[in-house]
Image (cartoon, rainbow over all chains, first blue to last red; front, side, top):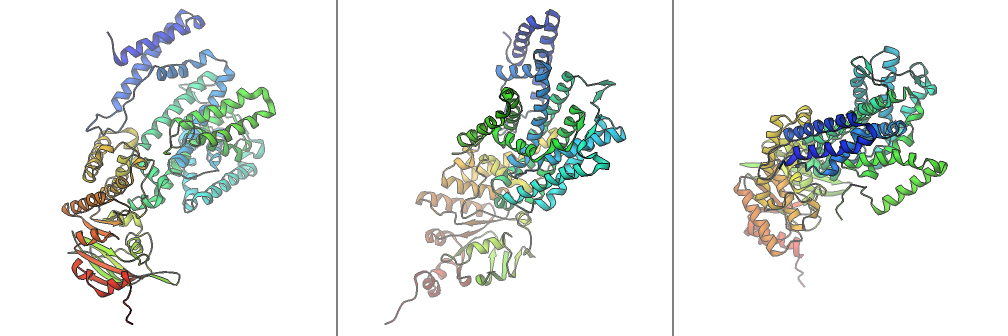
Length: 365
Length: 255
């Protein structure tokens, strides 16, 4: 009798093969179950390669207990493009971009406790960096990516130097101001940004001479970036920097008394959080092939904050779930037309009253 | 010999003198108490020592260096760690993580190694976890290392604060009313912990109201009243000092 990961891999891949048989035909079904099998094995291999051996029960990563639900979810995410319409896939691409955004913001709000109401500014900087470098200097997606991430991170760093001397509400107001300034600059610097008309003709990324222009290809591109984002943020949280951030959130005075240079670590949180907005911005610019200041309003910043809070700040799963819900919900409620924002608002209010820690968040009572 | 020396330490809050020309020395590897009625300036003294407030005048020497004006995190790094009168734990972090935060300045970790989880990173993490666990054993909390700090009972929270301060690697541990609100048995355990701290070579500086603790454990006592040092010496001397008795009980009225 086979046990463990191999057994689960075989079972799950067969299950998906059978499920997809009526839709795809025998050849594709075989292909699907084969690739699921390989991916699952690979996943498990990576998992065991990176987790630490326990010593007196103080291991650094909690052992991953794969359940059938986890595997089904992974399979679903991977094979969704073959099942649903391209309209839904397009929405999911947007959800993926927001997942990256809210995970980045979560570093500031959820882990370090710094309320940022101008996060869309970093998003805009990433999007415009790619748009300008691509259309004016003909730099490709991959060459521009480090530049966008760097510039967004730098913006976070530079904003942080004066702003992080403030606390709480005051910090929130300064970041709000920064968000508005960024949008207004983009609107008025006509020679560089083409003002309110925006920049058109932005390229999608291409890989080995093949343009990832179809919605399905782009779905996978974004999916990979989402996975990478989760992977990196999760690891950073479970290191010295992550612990320092959380201690600042819990009690800044005590954190200082523990030898933490709180200003420096808050600055790290700002730059490292802003960096992901650069990535998301570039993905957004490439997806729309068009950027304009309208996409980066205060409302956008508030929505990203709502995603973090709704899902559960200070967790990884929280912002992911929050983003998916807040991107998909307006689409689901589309037939209610102008009333849909009312439903959304009412939903948020109820959520904050009955479960203020968010969907997956935990809180000491 | 003397690890800390205060020279003419003065702190004004507006017109109020919280500390006035306070001078004394603290012997290395001893248990030292600062006592005094409420509002005597004891916590202000701790705050000046740890850099949380800046003294108006005066000098504080730690191992011969003047540390006035150092930011708090540098003072901790230099070797002075503290606990707080009103417990300040990282409530929504685990007990172990609280102590790991204490280790902050004892090791360095770069971004790349933590992202890639290199061999050295893992080894280092295991090492500091092991050390953190040992500190928890010292205060008797090792069995609860996975619980959230905010869920611990009051007495355990106080002990966790000590483990966290120890984890900074400091040689001077400042305890701000460690036995406040404790029952006699918990107080006894806390005194035992303080004795153990001395055994492992730490200097313990204590603010305390419980005279049984102060007289039972201290080697040297400084008494503050209204920001002024009114007495100092070993327990027996301080206990019988008329100025101290007056500060605590008031003056006798002769009819």
